[in-house]
Each structure stands twice: as structure tokens, then as C-alpha cells.
Length: 383
Image 1 (tube, rainbow, N blue to C red):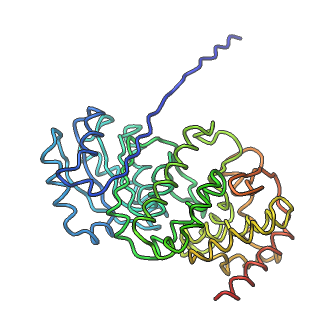
Image 2 (image 1 turned 90 degrees about the vertical axis):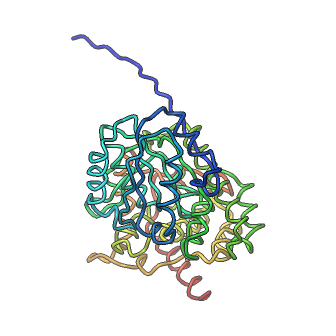
Image 3 (image 1 turned 135 degrees about the horizontal axis):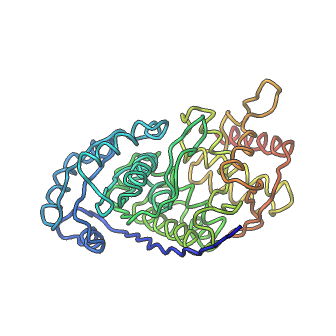
């Protein structure tokens, strides 16, 4: 027998830009990004709701590309929302659009929309020709401060969140704060949960900043919101780039604190409970469990829950109490699905302190049930 092992080192550049009015003639950010890659063709895919909110956007895009030395292949407006990744219909539309536009691996597909839209379009771009260059334009708080700056894209399958997907570093991410301010209040507010999450697992100072600016964030003050989004996005990106496991080959993923329950709650409710509020509930559950398991000072857990309540983020949903035929909470199936999705040993990150997590490999179902009861009582008392 002969065996040969080769090491294949690969380096990626993860470009993230924060700007406003990216398609304004006087804004060079996008032009510089596109010229850097030397690509010759480009097309733009816009989420339907974004196009409706910005009726002049398509004209702005056409005008911008008219001033560039690129073969512009037009704009496609496509459906978005959580249903966009419920199955592969949008992915197939993206493939068809890329094929019709004759884009190649040196071409650019620009995607403008929220997290679910970017996930589906990103998966389509990543699998067309084994990878067409994707430039993301996240438009929601959640996508600008978390998922849009990540290196994953996926759609749902078999009743499970993100079952079909891949890791791919986007060619660039452009966070245009004009889009951020166009979202409805619930969407802008809900996405703040990922900023709280990354602060809890990566940066105590950022959590302190959130707590200090709680009133302004609760009022969705534009300047404070944009500062929060940028800080959150950079913390997420730095963790991906410097955390040692950008493509999640191990068994731990700190940036998914609170997500084992969140993903299951989304699927259980047929995605009527969207990602942001689901993460709020999951984060509250894992925070309280951290305290009740003796890992986290109870006063710190209370401090975190008060921040969530101050941001008007729900900490309980009735689906937490849905039972299967054996009388077991259905959400608990999310633990094994979480392990299976990543592989290896079940690894859940809990909190030891603000900004400091600790990995555990099992959760006490009885104690989780007690935490659900506490969260329900606290939420009902508040509302």
C-alpha cells in the first residue's frame, strides 16, 4: 500500500464595508471592490420587499453600473422572507438567472436583501460553476450585524434548519446603513439579539456598552443602532477569522449560543416564529440554565434578562411547552439535531460570565423544564 498526504493551505480575504448610499454616484466603495477582482460581468438580485420599499433602487443601480467598466447583465427581483429558504425554488431561480446572464466564476452576483434571502441566493451562487463571486448587501439588523458577515449559506430541508448548505467566504459584504433604516420597527429591534449574543460570548465591554445605551437602542435611535450593528458585525467577523475554526470542523460553535433551541422552535412553528425572536427565547433559556446549573452568577443572569426585556425582546414562546406523545418537551429534540448538524460530540456553549463562555456536553432536561417555567412566569408577569 502507498499513501501520500498533501497539505493544501487556502487563504481567504473577507472584505466588509460600512457605508451609506452605496449606489450613489459619489460613493466609490462598490466600484473599488469590483475593480479589485477584475471580473468582467455582474448582475444584481434584489429581494422583492426591498424593491418595494425603495422604488427608485433599480434606477440607481442601473445608473451606477453605467459608470463602471463592466458588462452589466441586469437586475432580477426575487421573492424573499423565510419561505425563500424553505425549499430550493429560489436557489433554482438563481441558477437560471446566472445561466441566462452567462456569468462565470470571475463574474459578480450582487444580492440585496435580508438574511433568509442572502442564504438562498448565496447557496445558489456558491454552487453555480462551483462558485460565482457573491457580493452581499444585507438589509436588516440581523443580517447586517450577524449572518450577512458570516461565511455560511444554506436552505432548510427535512423539517430542519439549514440542512442543505455550504461554507463560502463572500467576495465582499457591503453594509449600507440606508437599507437598515428602511426596515419596520420589529425587524430592526429583533436583530439586536445577535449583538447581545456576540457580546455575551466574546466581549464584556460591548455588553456594557449595550446596557449603557439601552434606552437609545430601545428607541431605535439611528446613530446608536448603526454603531451597535457595526460593533456586532466586526466581533462576528473577527471570531470567524481568528477563532481557529472558521468552517466549523470541530464540535463547538460559540456564535451559536442559544441557537439549539432557536432552530428547533423555528421548525416547530413552521417558521412562523422567525429567527431573531427565536434566538431571543433560546438565549434567555441558555442564560437562565447557566445560572441554575451553577455556572453563572444568578445576578448576572438577571442582568442579561433585564437587557433583553429593555430591548423589548421576548424571552418566552408557548412552543417551549409543546409536548410529544410521551409527554416530553418537543424542543428538546433540538439538542440531538444540533449535535447531528455539526457532527461529533454534543457541545453547547453556556455562560460562565459576561464575555466568557464554557462548553458543556449534556443538559439536564428536568432543569431545562424548570427554566422554561421561570421564563414563562417572568414573561407573563411583565406583559
